[in-house]
Image 1 (tube, rainbow, N blue to C red):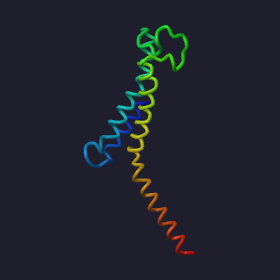
Image 2 (image 1 turned 30 degrees about the vertical axis):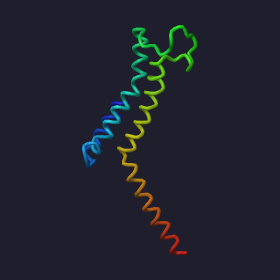
Image 3 (image 1 turned 60 degrees about the vertical axis):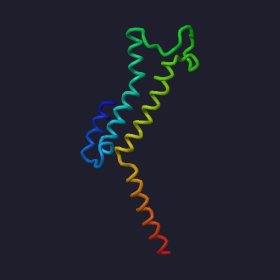
Image 4 (image 1 turned 90 degrees about the vertical axis):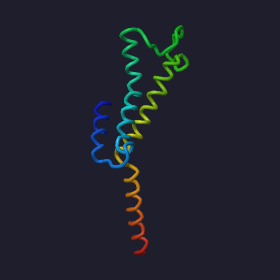
Length: 119
């Protein structure tokens, strides 16, 4: 799924204009977000298959937030949530949300200005 999203965003470089960052920025952010989101999934697979990279501290037998290791906190909380936040920002950038909101504001002003003049 993350690969598909990245390919879709990369396909959008054809319609973007500007500097290198303005054209490829959403793609770079999407790639970075995909890596962050997939870190915890990869850690789970490695832990299940080889018994390495556990997210809980040794000797703590409760699967709770207080028992997370440093790796567990980083991968489970920081990387995953940061990845989704970056993915949302990249998606908004790719969809050109700021320009669409500005267009909506201008149209709204035009509509409301016309409505107040007729009263």
